[in-house]
Image 1 (cartoon, rainbow, N blue to C red):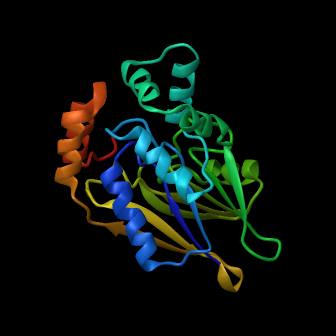
Image 2 (cartoon, one colour):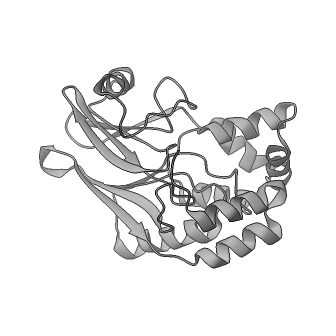
Length: 233
């Protein structure tokens, strides 16, 4: 079974469309999963959300989905309020419906799990250099032997005695100093899980211009971050 995992588009439609075109070109995939943080950040929150809805990709709730949901219920920061204004009622309802964890059967009794950050929190960050204890906890609390997550905007793989955890990266805002979009392909055939990290060039300058010209309250900051391809602190 061949599964592509995308995550953290953050309203960057130019990057998302480039990755979706690449998936169409390199497919078919048995499933495509979305690891959350779909809308908040960049200039096209509604369009990015609609792309995932239209394609029917299973998705999980990220911390910025929660920010948008909270803003819709009362009020949030300026950009969250702006995102709510951009979304249709059905798009907001879609974000509200997202689960914290998605479990994808991959044949036999095996399951691939997907969360945004961790199984216990959509906010906690587990860095690639975290101790084995943290990754053992992720596997144990997810209840699956193979767990993928986004949130940290970095790609990495960690095997521990009770399973494997994979950071799938961010297609819309990488944090490793490389502006290319990230996505990850998992081949679950042959009784194992083979991980392939992929990078894709896209028109970053177009995305920067879009962020500046129509990115809402966060536009200039998002453009700056795209330009820097910020490295993690």
